[in-house]
Length: 129
Image 1 (tube, rainbow, N blue to C red):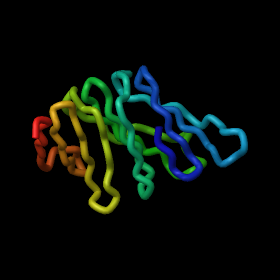
Image 2: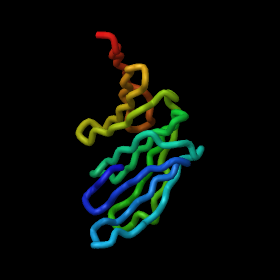
Image 3: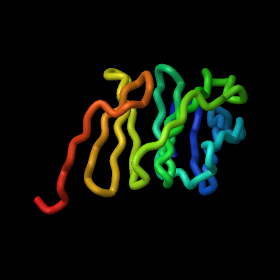
């Protein structure tokens, strides 16, 4: 679950992310977007400047959704999708650096290029330190 001001993004099994408007006393469902292969989503992140939603699925698929500005979520669409490590556990986005970060089960953090999703570098953190 990720919260952005008046919106909440909730992921569930089956590769779906539901977007809710929580500005009203009773939250309203806006739209449900899904990754291409309908795999379980392990983590989501949100870029508050560009209104991009990032998802990391259990098969290693990373999707970038353009969810538009508040009130226009019904026009959300997949901007990009690419394959990554199937051991991915976490995804994060840096607005200041315009880079994505993927963390996996092996202790590897991958820095991603904003334009094409290509890896910039990998950092390895062994668990037995």
